[in-house]
Image (cartoon, rainbow, N blue to C red; front, side, top):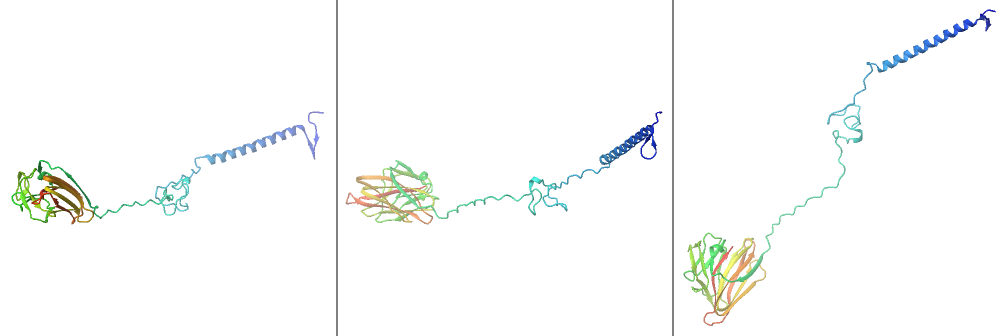
Length: 299
């Protein structure tokens, strides 16, 4: 029997060579199908990755304040506002946000300026009189001197305020020129200048004396009153026209002359005044125990 054996499979004879040829034909067929499939996959991949592929759509960023494009909700992520920023309140521009609630500001209260004048004040003290008194230097606002030439002679500061006023008083005034201290000035009227004078005026008898006043304007003022006694007890009463208690000081010498400088500090509203009375409270000589007056100055 030769190599070609006869196989009977189904109808008709089959040889071993025919079987091998059929196997190789089927193998080539499978390779062809696989190659075609591979080429098809490569074609699809090239098409997908090739230069004609559509580029990804760029992110849309709008400038601040630009209107939102149609189709995007206000404040949507990617439209000028980041997703972390949250949704914008209606009517606000991009990146504007409703401010968080806070405590209402504390109102600032400005105290109203007080229109009421300062409260009136008053004090009085006594000191020695310098050997020489310069009325021009002491009375920067006003000064007055009494008795230079006659009992009725009054010299006052030229161009002064006129705050010091002689209100009279009980008893007849007389002049003397033996005062232990001297007074001078350089800006007087009607006598412009005097280097030194020991003159003054006096009033005898209990209950008699002098009355003066000093006008106020709401500012603190200091009055220097130069006065004395001769063989008497003098009483100084000081008060304000606005009311209040009276301040009283006494000066006494039963044998001779004694002088003093009374320093009065006060403040009253404009239109009010300081009231001064210098009187004989008692005498040690029946003929003429008295109180005397030389000058007054205001600064």
